[in-house]
Image (cartoon, rainbow, N blue to C red; front, side, top):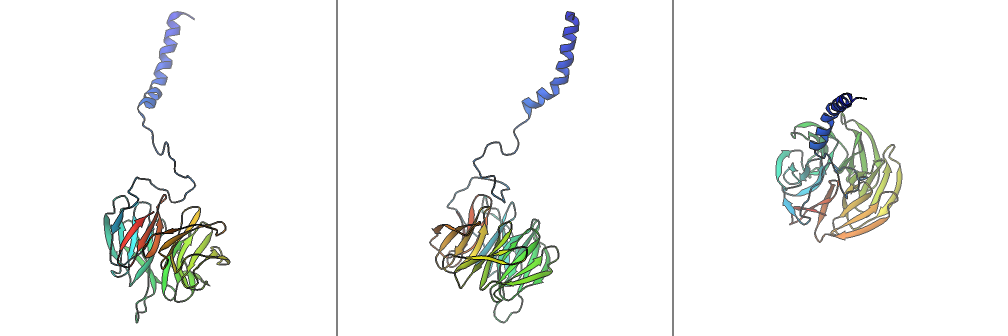
Length: 290
């Protein structure tokens, strides 16, 4: 090969590779490049550094919470509203009216479901469905007596009826009741990917039911007066109101992995992909991050 042909071939090759070489030089790293986070945890939509001891004021009588992938929604029992809170700063982004005595909150991927408990003499036990993007009410649906906790199983909404000793299963698309299952003094509800976990307020237990058909798979002892409950991708966390503590159980078999004292009345719980958030009733009126 002559020298001129050789240089011509090199020139053509350089021209062909130039765009790729330039792209490699200027393209920044995207996504998570290095992380110590557990990739098996569900609900990980973003991570940020925060002061682990921070508490944020919300409405009057904060109860339970849900994380929508960007923000926390907190039910304010005495204000008959839910507050939308930015978890990285604690800033309240909006407050939206719902029914009387809101307690449980759940996110279905697009909407927020809020359980409205009833006050004495008021017959309005139901759940309110709000659009997460703007808080617009999309519907209100009746459930059992004294509804409290709520959870989403990927297709359906489960509501714990403390007054009816049962859980109600509703289709998330239209709120149609698909079944009611007896579980004792039901209060909080969580979904672990296959099963529904329900806190038993009077018996100090949690009950595990198969989401497909509501069959009871087991009951497990926790602290005094268990209320809020949440799943972190591997474990079940239970807020024990009277004990002022949180119990961590392995979802696979219900084994207790630890009990953590928070030193004040605890109510609802939420998981943001890395941390557990707990709401405090009584005089505190705050939420804490574990």
